[in-house]
Amino acid sequence: VRAEDSGKVDGIKTSTLSYTVTITDVNDNTPAFNPAAYVFTIEEDSSTGTTVGTLTATDIDDGANQDLSYTITSGNTDNIFRVDKIIATQVAELIIDDSTNLDYEASQKYSMVLTATDRGSLSSTARIEVIIHGINEETPVFIPSSVYTSTIAESSAPGSVIMTVSATDGDIGKDGDVFYTLVSGASGKFSIDSISGDLKIISKLDYETQIAYTLLISCADNGINPTAYTSTGTVSVFITDSNDEAPVCTQNSYVVSLSENTSPGDVITTLMCSDTDGTSPNRDLLYEMTSGDATFFGINMNQLVVWTGASFDYELVKTFSVTIKVKDQGVPQHFAMVEVTVQISGVNEHPPVFSAAIYKISVIEDAAIGTSIGRIIATDADEGTDGDVRFTISN
Image: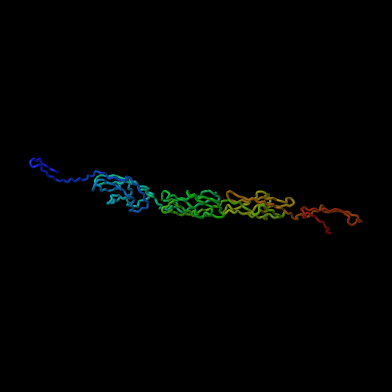
């Protein structure tokens, strides 16, 4: 600053003085984030202390007015995250403060608001989105247990579903998808649907060949990070017998010769029949005479016998036909038919009978040798050679 007078005699006199004006900063600028929104990605198994990312806010005020503090003001569920400030650069670091509750299955994303505040009351906010990447950390488990039991009839048709196994995996998404495999024990009889867990019959069962199967099954998830996990179970399949076999006889027809004087109760023939079903009553056989003269014949177990009181007469009936039904006791019932031809053979049961008790014959005394002097007649009721009569002079 210069001052001068208005002197006219000696001239104008002046003097100067220097002033220093100091401008003090006023906190008149709001902090600003650049950018105003952040997206970070972390693995669900990230450990405590892991840096998620950095965020930057600036304040164009000077001095202490540009000093910022950072606070997560919303969205920090379970206090998983914290913000640390790098003093030298005023940059904020988003850090995992407690990884205990960091679980992809519980939450796949965290949306938070970060507030930057200067030394005054001015502040601004940024949006933070932290996306959690799941890892395959759970092993699939069969439910309600890893041991299954099923009982099925051997007559069950191929394609039939005998049971459905199920497994659960605590992971979600593709890591929790479960696929099923039949590992061993199927012997070409069973298959499993890899998606549904349906256990099916794929070829005909036979109780007489195998009555039980022990299947080893597995369930595996679809995880790749860090690997897929697998567990196993067993299925015990028990086969019950069905009446799927018919009786079989060693012969379906017999020709039997029987003397006409055969005694009642005598065995005519024995049928050799069997049923290859594995259990009773499917393999139990009954014998029934379905045609034939019940006056003469009957069934005793598997034997065709001469009925009590029967009396054959070769001279009246020489041949009988008998049909026997051999049936099992299963459901549905199966049977076989056997034909028996009984041929009656005669016996010499009748003596010859003369046509008269006394024959009177006259002959002249000079009859020549060889002259027929009369006819003696005798008959025999038997047939065949038994009925042929020969004559001799006894005295």
